[in-house]
Image (tube, rainbow, N blue to C red; front, side):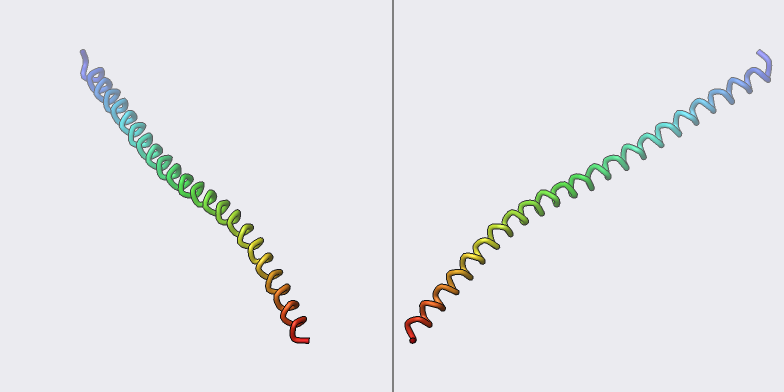
Length: 84
């Protein structure tokens, strides 16, 4: 083999190894970023579920307040009626 062929083979091997290493590094970084994004989406979904639950509880509490206020109004009317 000539010197030029050996140099070309060494350069080719270096190119293959460098390209493969770059692809692996890029793949690892992409996987890491995807994992971080999945974690953020999971936290967001958990928050949304909690908000829906709180909104449901607020409707119930609002109804209870309406009943309580109505009862207070009835009691005030009843007390005013007894005073006359």
